[in-house]
Image (cartoon, rainbow, N blue to C red; front, side, top):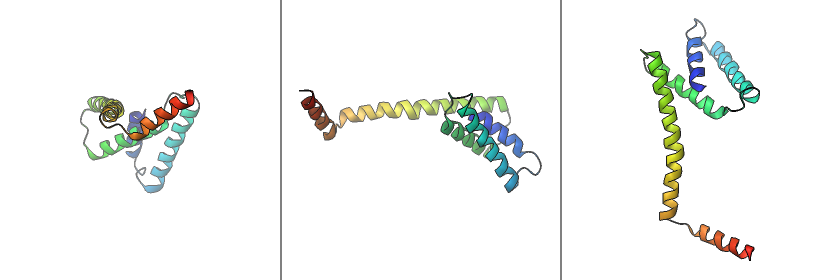
Length: 120
């Protein structure tokens, strides 16, 4: 949804006069309100921070890189965001588990001893 929102915002910024301070601030405020409203009503499955981060990332890339093939660009952006979720989310969790096994902390053993003492 953030990619779609970025494309909408980018298109609205192409309207003459919309790139000025107040019109763009009002536009971004309304789009953000719509995001919050949709998430609170009919789209409860969405996660607002992820939506807004994807929106900002899309806007940042679009404004700094010329896009020649929009369909290919959106597909690549979507793929890279999904890959980022898996690499950052799952790979960092897996790395954390490996590091916990290699370098156990003393707090874990103290918690285990306390838990077993409480069970007795």
